[in-house]
Image (tube, rainbow, N blue to C red; front, top):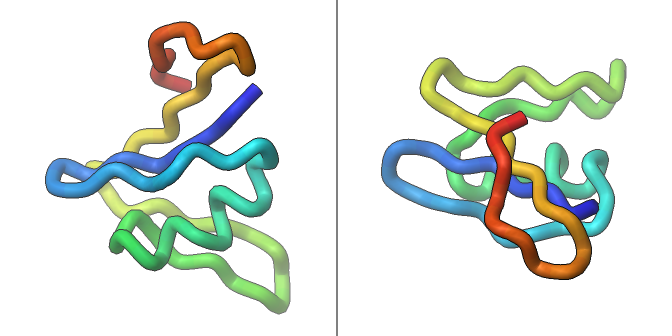
Length: 61
């Protein structure tokens, strides 16, 4: 599976690991990753998209 975060104005890159996608989401303004707790707090209109490795259309998670 691959993961990315999408805001109304930007879409992140696809990452093979959810944890990496969460850490990188702050670069597009999709949320905040708290390093101390390891938790990700997405902003209000942010969506997580998931797709299979064979390139299927993204699914909303």
